[in-house]
Image (cartoon, rainbow, N blue to C red; front, side, top):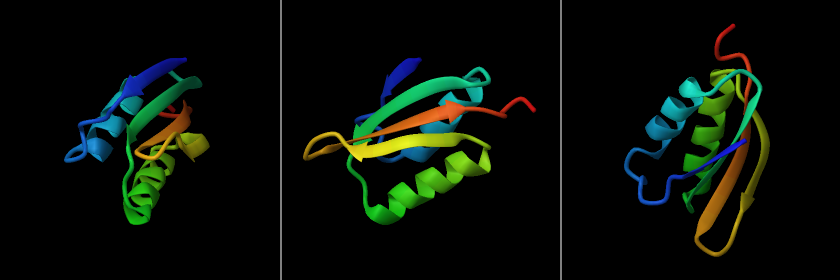
Length: 78
């Protein structure tokens, strides 16, 4: 399990998150923390993860300004 702090990456959050997922090993659990985004942006990020065959295990607001998403990087190398 690895954790990634993506706070400060608001301009390229989705791109950076997907880059990290592509580097992950199969079935590895990754935790991402980033600054709160709009509901539409969050749905877009989750849909992009699923398109890459990732499994979103959890998504929650960590505090007033941060979100965490827990992802299993499964199937990227299938």
